[in-house]
Image (cartoon, rainbow, N blue to C red; front, side, top):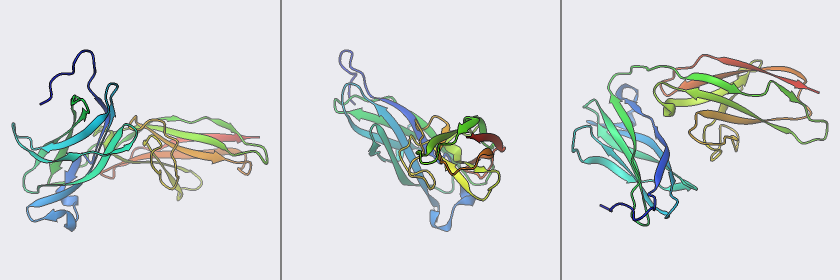
Length: 255
């Protein structure tokens, strides 16, 4: 194993760990995911790695059984997807027979062979579905009033931001969405992605920082938007299909 870093040089640091899903239920798996006494589980694993003194050489992920001194049952490396963000979708094979919770570890090594600390998560495997707690939309960060642009002027960007949480962890939130109360069939997804990937039908979410529980969607107000009050409804949905209470917010468009 590499030794401690020389002098005052700092090892890499890991933050913004994401593991999804964190719970696998046998009864909800498809036939393609069950192979005899084993199951195949698709996971998303990601971290942000900060390193001030040397470039990152590799970011490892490992899954271990709960028994002490157990060998890893799966592992690999995470590719860099954008700047200091490392993330991948991986498929692992687990026992379908034994109900247990697996440890998921991620650590980084820089080019000077200095090791970061470990990001740790838990992957719970159960046979029977037991819904947890629904998510919560805690706060909306949206202006109450917006001035409509004049005819011929560019559209104005408006960020809709919802702070959401889940007792089972932020990665358990499957979706945060909103809709105009007058058009409930047209729902727009909100994303906590750091604006790195498409969000719903939009090429960008406008989100500032990934994994900070602030789900964002940028909308545009043009000179053709009607004046008056628009009532919007916000809701979060977790991976078990549990829905938060609906939260409403009105935006008044003025001349």
